[in-house]
Length: 210
Image (cartoon, rainbow, N blue to C red; front, top):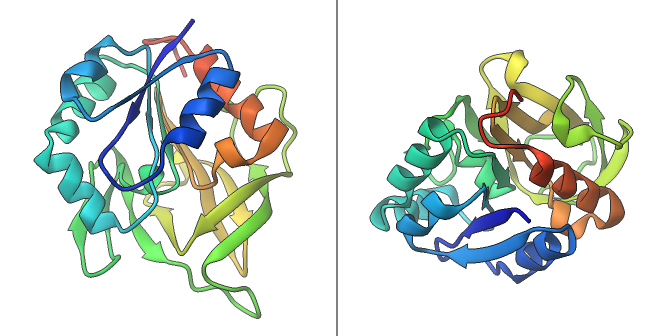
């Protein structure tokens, strides 16, 4: 059974993510202790809130360094959810400008949809796959996942965009490279299809070719 570290940096309720991990066959361990990450088979970085406060909290607790050591050096499978996905890119323009973890080349920008599409983008929306990924096993492209966000990731290279979603224009809804994945939606709130994605993530082995 996969040991899953769910990173607590003080900005969100982590119970729903932990419950979803348990239901999908993992052992969830919510932790704010950098040392605990080294014991994990998988790491999930959830998030709700503002980018600058989130990155400050990660840094002040030493979690940014621990994440780099475990994910970049140790090749442990990593999943960023919502704000957790945004934190892995280079920088954000939310509330000014702030540096991210820098694992994926790109920038976080506010949604500026055309037409009558509202911000925040809230509710169910289709996710269209544009690359093969182990996250998508047994999931058909175009399935609905649950979103709540006002900002999105704009990647520098299309090769790191695994799926996109349309909301008054297209934005990256899944990004990734090697053992690193990010989803803009909330799989823990996306019912059957979201749980399938979590099971797929838990099935990825550390150091495996992704």
